[in-house]
Length: 352
Image 1 (cartoon, helix red, strand yellow):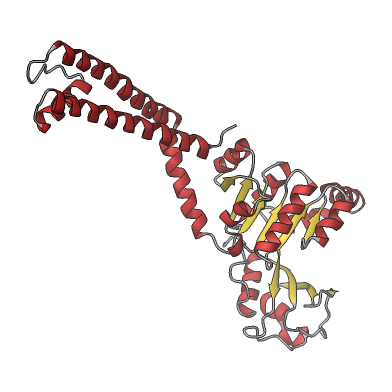
Image 2 (image 1 turned 30 degrees about the vertical axis):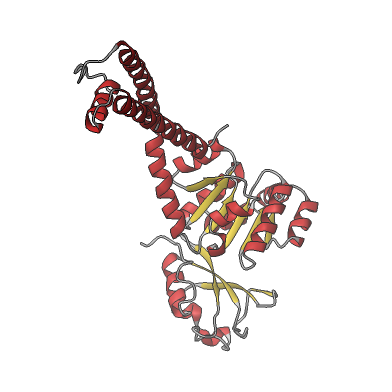
């Protein structure tokens, strides 16, 4: 199936061919009347124009039998050529090529403005839920999808989407991977996700790459390829089913603070930068984050990857620590201001 770009390119080529044919027929007619009939250039051009447009003004000067036969052929050729152009333009209007072309140019301008955005590779059943969460969190993102039907479905939702193979470097570059902060690969096969992660990490080693995997072996391979996180719908789904059966209230609480737009509490992460954060080097008790903001520090991940769950008041806040906090939208915004601000673009909670 041809993509919109292929159809649009074909239409432009056909219109160009039609215009060149009209110009060629016009020049042939003009040269005939100028050199065969020995008319002036103006008379020759005028005679050709009224002949091609079939306005029926008649002959400027008397024509012999040979020139009348030529004029008849010129009329027939002009009608066919102009009719061809009119047909192409009508098809373009009916099928919306011009409107789609304008929309495509607008999308290109939006892509050019993207920075610190997310790239979502694929728009299948899993990726659609990812897109919904990104939309709820007000995260700028772009979709890369091979199937034209899926691309159109993404555009109908108002998402920026480009059609192509996400495993190709050219498509990732088109999606401005150099300026992206995260890539989520939710393509149908593990091999495609593996190639996408490899390409993404090659083009932007700093990007956070998250991939979907179907098997435990694929999880290991994607991790070796550089994926920062790998999610298996089957493994994760099984664990969540078990958790929902054994600890239903816990699952309801966790789901309520992680997803959706109508939340009372949120979870957010804050990276401590020693250049802007006044709390670095202090015990958590002395930082008084809970007292000043009301937000709760649930865990701290050290720069070396060590995770401190449920930190105590004696836990020292260090440069490069990642604080995982929970609170209301206003509490987390206050915490963000207190810590620097560290990540002003990361807080996507709705304003009340």
